[in-house]
Image 1 (cartoon, rainbow, N blue to C red):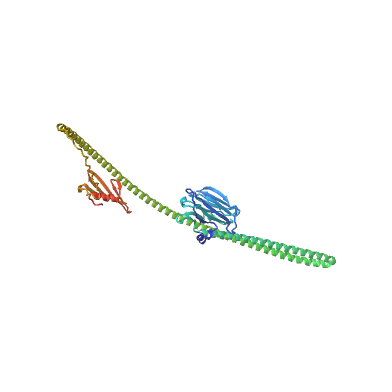
Image 2: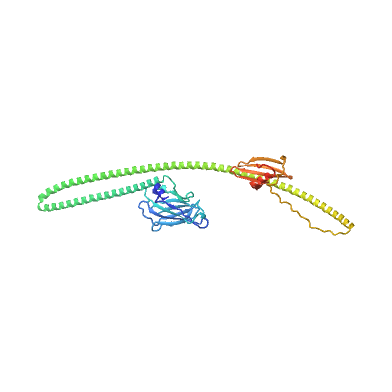
Length: 470
């Protein structure tokens, strides 16, 4: 991921983040996300010790830490939460990112803690530069289940361009400040040079006056003529000096006016640029709002479809429950019929048993009477021969039971996702219901009186009644 980010977003490498995934082996979601990073000056790459790192968890304050003397910091984050990381330092502009530890695997899939490396490059705050692009998170860190690792995405795809424009604005302000300082320094040097020339001229005039006074002491007559010449020369010099000063003042006023005009033009240009950027931002915001509205519409439609599917599924389940209830009711009725038939059969058997016992008692009385009438004889009793009944043959080899057509009926119906064939067989005064249920996804199931049976049992019992399986 390092190479991909460095190629696509080179300006973000100093801001963020190379996240390397590893796994942990603790109790359920007991692993942590180990975050480490450094804070630097974006322009000079100087490490910023004491930088403030503020962390919020789910929108609430979580913890605040400070970078050490090497500009480094580290902290641990819990799984299944969302965090916002804000890094700031004195006269620098803060930067913000988000980290989500949601939608991550459980500890059964983790062998050791996750780890992440995040680096922040902060811009030095400069007057008259708009840093509002950094008021919101510039990137988001999240877990990618497909790649089974954490990944990073840029919040604004125009962020690279905006950061480059921000750097250019900072550099321009710096260049303007340096140019202003240079102009002020040159003006101070020019003023100092002008003062030096004035002092030199005054010294020369004083020297000339001293020589003139000495000459006047020697030759008084010549002194008057020379004094007149000096006065005339001084007047000329004063006039020239006044002319130079007036020209210098005019040039300074002109330069000041030009500088003010340039500053006004630059301010107007900056205002126009800011307005254009705001209009572009408003347009982009409107576009995103429209996209979000369309997405909300699509989600609402999907939810309505899901609700409709859930209603259909509930209806089908109710129908299945109704069938199961009817089958259970029918089974109970058949059990009651069977129970009544068995009770009746038991009563008949008991009646026959009593009749046989009565007959046996009467036969015994007749035998005893006959024995009394006959002479006593020795009778040798032999052990009775007991014959075992032959083993019952399996259903496959037993001849099919004769089922009359009027004792068999069929029907079938669809439940949307599956088809049911039913066969009703009346035998021994009891009706038995068989079902063959075939689902659209290919599964086939069988039931007898509402209870599950296998395919083999179903076919075997159809053969038992001499019927062909549906």
